[in-house]
Amino acid sequence: MRVTIDLDEPSEFALLKAYFNIKALNGGAEARISASGEGYHFIVRGLPISFETSLRLRRLLGDDTTRIMFDEEESGKPKQVLYRKKGKRQVLPLDEKNILALPFFSKFIHKKRRLDR
Image (cartoon, rainbow, N blue to C red; front, side, top):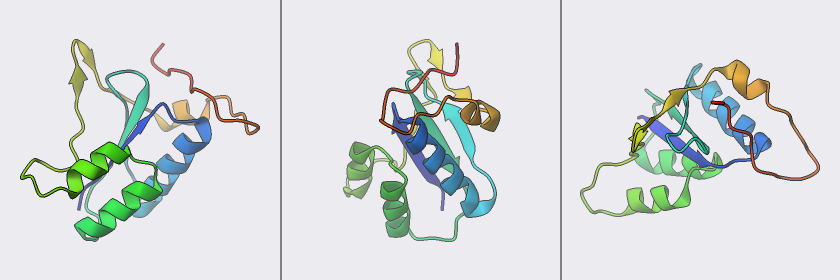
């Protein structure tokens, strides 16, 4: 089962939590900066879990609740859609070192810094 996580403007803690937990599931995950430049996409493939378990996992890792709601509906639409571009902006790969290099503030949750500048 493929599991996708879409984090919109996460704090550094939420970003690190999601990234390292999904990476630990099978030893790797694709990480990308979303096309908006304000969020992150994570994809892990080949998990031996059911669709229902993937929904629970996505909730635990902070996936966009609207995406989860759409995937729970029996509408015949594709599940776990992540867009690769928005207008002229493309989704960019994200190196683990870029995540670890972010300044971390534990006293409050604040808007993250863009990594593509």
